[in-house]
Image 1 (cartoon, rainbow, N blue to C red):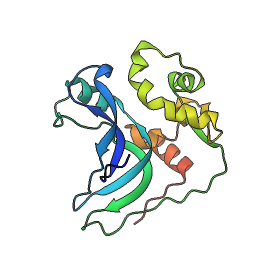
Image 2: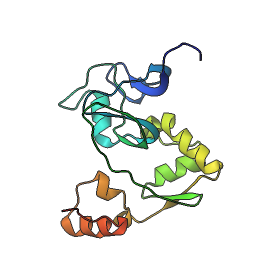
Image 3: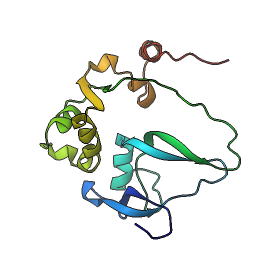
Image 4: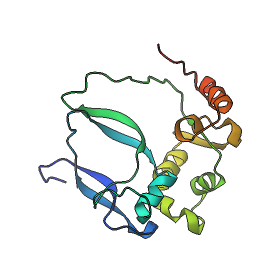
Length: 176
């Protein structure tokens, strides 16, 4: 696309409602980070339950429309605002395929075939990238027990014992 402006693909919400209000656009202007922000080239994105409430319009705080859902992201920092002075880089060397564990049977099912459940309809736009990476041998999705899902330490409110167990599994230590 030779438009002379930087654009990206994004799932956008123009009105509050069900999963059908999620619209994939390929010509969204690339944002410029504000003073205390970073611009991340997103490699993977998730939509958590709170974001489904926001999308439906039932959450107490509503963003201005249109907006892009998906605050759970992984990627590479492409640009930083003028007041951003440091950030930690997580250097992980891994051999392919990278194993991704999930305690969601539906997420696992969606990477194996196109059959989805009605309540997972909101995933259909996003899961194709994961399915493609599975098919290309970059990632391997495996089922794990909910008690051992390391991602829960980053996404859920946990009891202290479970938090400590999962934190240890990630190899995270507190810096003093």
